[in-house]
Length: 389
Image 1 (cartoon, one colour):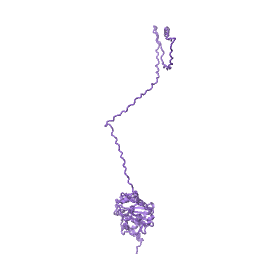
Image 2 (image 1 turned 90 degrees about the vertical axis):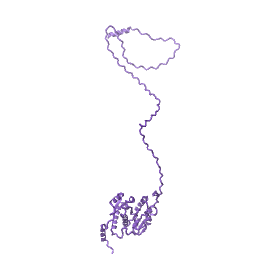
Image 3 (image 1 turned 90 degrees about the horizontal axis):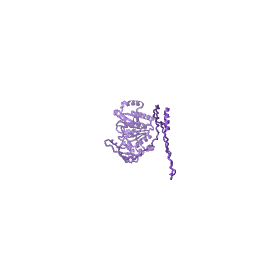
Image 4 (image 1 turned 180 degrees about the horizontal axis):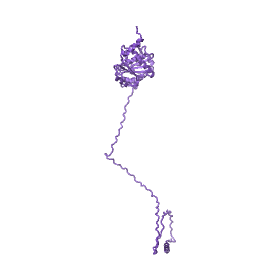
């Protein structure tokens, strides 16, 4: 190893000196240029790590040991700054219209519901009282508020019923029919103490079952009590029968008052010496149901139940007209009259279904045989009442 270094030293000493490369400036310069400003100092070059230079060995005849190979470390990569990203500005692209797909591939069009323009129908001007009857304005009906003056102006007529009307007689209280209606009166008066009931509708499933006779006898039985003012109204405008039972005039009556042809004090009659008032049906009309649908009919019944203790209405049969169904909604209760041997179970069922079940107070059975029902009353009353001599 020492021999190698000695050979290298001798070679360095024998090398010629380097030539002088300096150039002398001219002594005199006629025009001296203005010195340029010193350039900006350049950034120092990146320091590069290099392996130390090793001179090549001199080959001599003397055998020299070769030094071990020196492996240079790998160069460290220089971190260069990333160049700025330049985003090119593209010119605006013209909008292109795409052609529509063929008709076969296009989806079916959605049906659009056309809006129907609203049709404004001119409204008819209602009449003065807001009620029409068969397309014509109904007359204005004034319901009195001072009923004491009305009752004082009511005409009194003698009590003269039809002989074959089967009406109870107050002078003969021992008869069995009178006692039956007294029993019915007692039950109704007891119900009146439990709930406010002052107006009743007496009807039947079919005609000729005795509803008019039952309504008249119940009104007579109620009027026999002291201070028990009772009003019997004939609302059967189709086949009225109350005026025939008491042999009074049919008109003026209810229809005349509702049509504005007569005041109410001229339509109501009172039997002299009794508490019974009668309101007959009035003249015949061709539209009884339309007349009952007038607003002042309900108002009239509401006023009458405040004046009289009992207001009893005779109405048409249930299965032949809708009048009784309408009147039952305006009154406090309904009594159904059936006849033995005439009314069927099917008729009673249909009649009950047509009425509100909570509004039916009871059923009156008519047409019982005298021997089956009245024999016990004959024996009972003959024990207490002596026959006149």
